Length: 608
Image (tube, rainbow, N blue to C red):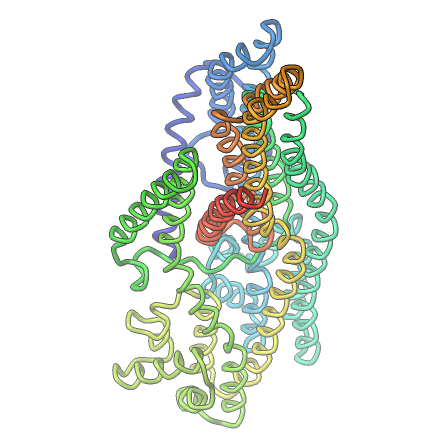
């Protein structure tokens, strides 16, 4: 999403949240002190409300949640425990409300730090051409996008008219979150004052420091998160699914399991545990590499999706009706909601994902393009002619992008920068910060001439190292997250659907046991009838006939929501909090989980 549309969406959500918090804060008209961490997080997020308002609003949430929870506590618990239960749930909601801004700020900082090596790389290039820290800092800020570049730009603005460049203050601000970035900025400043030979070695050490520091922090995070993630998987997924499989046997043995406890445990408590554990894990990710943002005004995204949404709604209704007619009526709402929500998310974000794929194809050859252009410039070829040659030498999307830039430059008679970044430039529809930074480097080389050739060659190697770092980080985390995704979308729904079919079959068998036993005499019939009554009662408590619908819906809600939470957790750990990627993968997971759950129910019913 482009910066403009993204900010617009986020500002709208922020304004709505602020309005709700102000309304809730009026329920607790008290003077309350806020923590420094909350105030710092709200300042970082540019929140329109104060920390005191958030704290009072959180307590207002506690009042509302407690009042809503009290009736449930009265129905499910002894009267003496209902009020403490409602108060406990309300206070937990207040704590969550107070912690959300802190966790959100932490995850945004992690996403910002993904560009740390890019900022240092751009500063290194500028210092290779001219050892002036002020111009290097300004160039690194101007040619980047995101929070880190904005932070550097703010420090550059504050340093104007002073003997400082703003780079040291920038490093000090971020050194507690990524110490390697602080070391890198120190090395950059020292290299600017060094002799030419020492300067090159110092610049290489600066980039090595931020790359190695990022890699080490990600490796430590992967090691540290392995045990908690295994615990979440074992106690939040495997054990509940195993207990679901045991429930039919418990029903046959006469162990009463009521509907309300089942709903509270599976559809409330377990899902809250998964959500809390997921937020805790994601908030501790030190660095993230989110995909580029694509705005709604992008030509490949801006088309109307109304017809596709209507098609999804029609498909959801058709599938729900077919499930009710062919399988069982209780499947209709579950299947309808799963297909409707999952399909709508896929329709909403699939065009953006296609743009992401195009961006990745362009970025895949940027290091080769910079290297080849740099070699030609070293040999004395002008950047404009070098781009024309490299466009013929490179295949794929990167070569096509360079060819478009050359064509635009000749047709419109513009400079290199406008050929790439102008309104009609080759990158006008490619929202890639990395590609735009490369274009800025090429534009700079066009003004600097032959001395920029060696800098382009060195930058190409550094860009290749950045891409390797991202691939290694995602590959290492993917080993931990693939199991979560597969469990949420396939394994969990498979076990849940088969279990519901087994409950239905056991209940049907218990219902037919009495007539069959009558042929063997009254005593046998009485004994079998008593056993059947026990099994039927247990089955009714679980959701047997006619309560199979209840059991199927309870398990189905758990299966679908756990698919959402596990997919969101896996995606956020691997890529960071990106709304497009989260929405698209959750949509696919919902469609897969709904299909698998229904298929497992039908198939198991035919086999058992």
